[in-house]
Amino acid sequence: MGLLSKKDAKLITDPLADNNPITIQVLGICSALAITAELKASIVMAISVVFVLAIGNVVISLIRNIIPSKIRIIVQLIVVATLVIIVDQVLKAFAYELSKTLSVFVGLIITNCIIMGRFEAFALANGPWRSFLDGIGNSAGYGIILIIVGFFRELLGSGTLLGIKVLGDPIEKTGVYAYGYENNGFMLLAPMALITIGIIIWVQRSRNTALIEHN
Amino acid sequence: MEHIELFFKAIFIDNMVFATFLGMCSYLAVSKKVTTAVGLGAAVIFVMAITVPLNWLLDVYLLKDGALAWLGPEYAQYDLSFLSFIMFIATIATMVQLVEIIVEKFSPALYNSLGIFLPLIAVNCAILGGSLFMQSREIQTLGLAFNYGVSSGIGWFLAILAIAAIREKIRYSNVPPPLRGLGITFIITGLMAIGFMSFGGMLTGGDEKEVPAEQTAVVKQVEIKKDAIDLAKNETEITE
Image 1 (cartoon, rainbow over the protein chains, first blue to last red):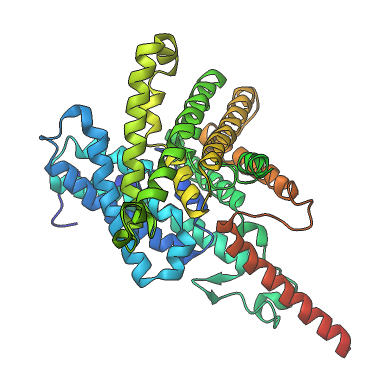
Image 2: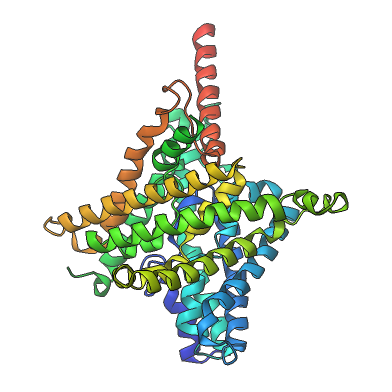
């Protein structure tokens, strides 16, 4: 952190915990739930969002003074859509199976609220370097939650991590399966992602009581 | 018959919130009161009813592989589907803007009650998601596309109505402080999603589960592993 001033470093570290886009700002939930059944898909999605948000933030920040206010949303949407098309084509070319698993959710990065949210809240009012850092910070915060959820869902749901069987072989009954452990197939289904994130929120707010909502 | 089947499928089995988690951000943010939830839900149905058929027309006559054949046979080789994202989102943003202007002119009362929700809908992932699913599931006719748009919107409306009603009541319960607000909403939504999974056998009589394609790969994995384990069990029984 030697070359970043303290204020700039905060732009990266804040969204990782205290101002996390998913658990605190309530943005970017849709994709966090739908594609986290496999750790690999979560990692690829996180990297895609880092790419789109960081570069998008810089582009919007560079043109912020020439966008007329009335067509602001449309300009933002076009910038994001272009970046997402690039990501989608790269995925289809180099990782076709993965792009099938992610299916429409790559396209839905366009409407991922984190991206539009950060454009509006930050890139429209700040310079390109700080916008870049803010983009990296928020997408890293999003990525961390995605990876945690993907980790637990894949581990408990299919006993593998990134496709490698880490708990032993369920058919040969080696490792943990020899003691009668069974994979919890339910974790691979959608609703458990919601409950996992609920538990992450519970843990986070217990440790930092300032974040508790008051009715 | 196809229409009725699609209608019920889109509302209950492929529910936008509980099966595919689209529109979650506004779903979580706007569900504190039932009245605002109803307003947003109605606006979503309205916008989806307009944009899904429009995007269907765009897809069939402009974007699909070979779609441009109506211009002339030499154009049939073009596949513009990579432009889908930009075209769909541009249509949605434009339609929302247009709808806002029309509603403001013809029914100021409705415009005031919808308030800020109408422009917010343009970036609601449920709207874009509806169009993208319409494309990936290859809906065949304009009538079916309209049906799909309306019924997906109704499914979303039901979901946000339910969670808003529950959140209003749960204010009187003893939720642990760290879970209050956002955390308990996540868990309740998860439980509601589990409940909606029970609709899976609705149209096929329960013999064959109809699961959306996105989940099929995952569920198949689970089933293949279960079959393999059962096979192994049977083998050990025989040898013993």
